[in-house]
Image (cartoon, rainbow, N blue to C red; front, top):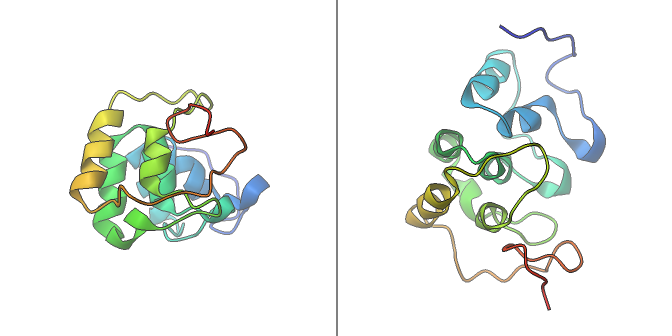
Length: 136
């Protein structure tokens, strides 16, 4: 299925990301494959992001549901900038060739599962807000 030549599961690259974090940007098949080979879905990525932070950016509802089913407590966890997975779902990502065909459904799913909509983030990147508009 996949040719993997990395020593699993502890390889870390820039920002402290592991292969599982990159898989969370892709498909559920990628995630399950790495889990089957010892990757830890609970491993915190760079910027103190959990698996749900990564999954929402994928734009894939099945990935979001999979992570929430396993770790419901991730839903309101803050990253180093005070961003929850809901903030990440609201923000437009123009990298990684990510599609947002299910973005609205993901936001609704997060809200239905207890995502706090009144959390106030620290702001994160200068001039960046979750909606992609300047934070002024």
